[in-house]
Amino acid sequence: MTLVILAAGMGSRYGGLKQLDPVGANGEFIIDYSIHDAVVSGYEKIVFIIKEENYDLFRDTVGKRTEKKADVSYVFQKPDSFCSLAIPPERKKPWGTGHALLCAKGSVSGPFAVINADDFYGRSAFSLVRDYLGAHPADARRHYCMAGYVLRNTLSDLGSVSRGLCRVGADGMLRSVTEHKQLVRSGENALSVLPDGSKTPVSGDTLVSMNFYGLDSDLFDRMEEDFSRFLRAPETDLAKGEFGLTDAVSRAVETGFCDLSVLPTYDSWFGVTYAGDKPFVKEKIAEMHANGVYPPSLI
Image (cartoon, rainbow, N blue to C red):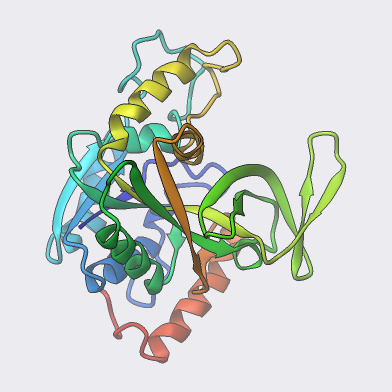
């Protein structure tokens, strides 16, 4: 079982390479906890998707200690990967999370899970996704899954966040994901701030996508076609547009290429969206070490 970790994001709102900012008492990064939970849950291969210029720093820190626990590969997300068009000079960001995963084509075979590097997911999600993929091989269609997190557990007290709100059928299957760009906490619930400035209430119980998917390498060919379509679409802004993983997976569901089960996950989720989130994350992680959820050190 392979775990793909998306670690090429620029972290513009946070400032700096937030994937390599310690949150544990011994210098552990958030990514170390995901790797520990994955290995304990039976994942044997880790594929890091990073920017090429970060390779030396990334391998000297995260990579070398991960290599002691699992088979490790590195994939570079480059602007020209799978892109035959001329890239506008004002383009500064990568092409998004969907493109990042697509860059792993050829490095991943069979079922795999994919996560963000800068999110703390909790151990149960790794087991849920692994077990689901193992129990649901492809037949007439592919059977994918996603760890669904409770919205209230994914909000920041310091500003708005972007989340994919899931519409789930009675059978537990994903019907659609709607991206809300600005969600702000409102007690136990949230408010979605629309482009015109109006606000719509959203229940805190809503399940959301945090980019923790269980997929299969069969998806890569389809993603490559979708990325090519995205680049050539009249509405795509080649200077700023992003090919998101949620959009790519949603399209695969909508067109019948696969179905996708939403696996409710009630573990605590922590994210360092803003620099001010870090003290809270460090406190929660320290509590888990103290309570024996994690050994005294992961280093």
